[in-house]
Length: 588
Image (cartoon, rainbow, N blue to C red):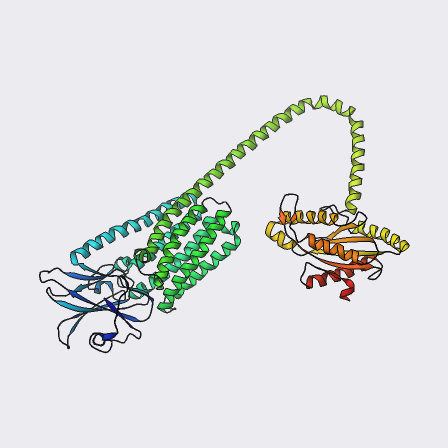
């Protein structure tokens, strides 16, 4: 067998048999010709030689019902002016006008025994052009169709059984997940019926235009319903909002493309859109399944396996449609194989979901019983306490004076705690802005007497928001505590480390001879934060800080001015790339 591409689709049978295109045929290098998505017409040339005693009725069968137009040319003479018998089939022809009414494409071969004849097959289609040619006798074709009906009947019977079973589950439970599964499975069954040619034969044999649209329209609707089922099954709105949004967009895109495939898009674009959307949908579904598996949602494991099964089949068939891999059983029927496996595994997933819901209900009932027993036990204890209340009352009066003494001590302790809270940060225990101001006033008086310098270092953590968004606010609080402990370890006992706001710390350095001591402390802080900060819970968190430095008396005479100038220097440090320090003198 050899082949010829007719790019413009303008060659006639005489052109390819006796005309200028005769010598342009190329021998086939693969068993099943596959040319991907192409607008060209393709000619196949082959010779059939029947023995003199072979009087069987031979048929030429193409095991791919999606082809639009298949034409067979059989010579009716042996000279150069040969007349040609023209046989036509394909899904653009009403089903009852086909030469042989089977779901595949079949054409009779009027070849006489004892002769050798060269035949030409012309194929043109808006779908993927795959031409699995089979030479078969008429009884063999009948047997082949019986086997095909049996196999696909079992397949579609499984789809109907699963749909009815889940519909029966939906009626008593009113769980929308089962209804979404029914819609998804039903639409997938219709899409595959149209893809395999059964819908054209049994559902809409005269609707040629709709038959051309149906695989793409139903395919996109299946993808949209698959996204909706996945959202309901995995509860992605609550469990994974970002994945839920991706599923919504994918479902909306599939619905819009389904509308576009009904004559708005060109046939080639419609086919290509389905192939690409199948790959995109497979990626989104797998992402949803594996995210929920990592979150510990047990039924998602079955769904992930189901998704993998469909992805393998869909990718194989998509690559074959694009002409990237050769046509074989897997690439021709990948979607059917993947769909059957997927639907079976999804049934296990739904069953597992029912079991989990039942288990959670039983656990809730058990917890309710335990709570009830605890309540009854508390009630019994209350009754016993009430009986002893009169006797205990006398003893309570005797203990009243002692209780009053305890209350006085508690009040004093509370007052001490209030005084401490008024001067310290409640999270880190560091001095707050009030205590920092008091210590600055004391240090200022000492510095004026001894003619020494003071320094204010204003620190701002660079990525506390990232830690909060990634690990949660508890982790952010742990980081702030760990940073406070680290800062206290880097300064002298006479110095003060204070927390003045969210992720803002202030270091007051006293008794400085020059400005280098403050810069050395800033370098130590930055170097310390190059290593992970270990929290009390053993978590290793990374952060960095930007530092601004202001000196007394050069940069200000009061703490408000010094903090303001240190803040301006810190802002310049952030603008310089963070994780560094700047002096106020460098800013002005």
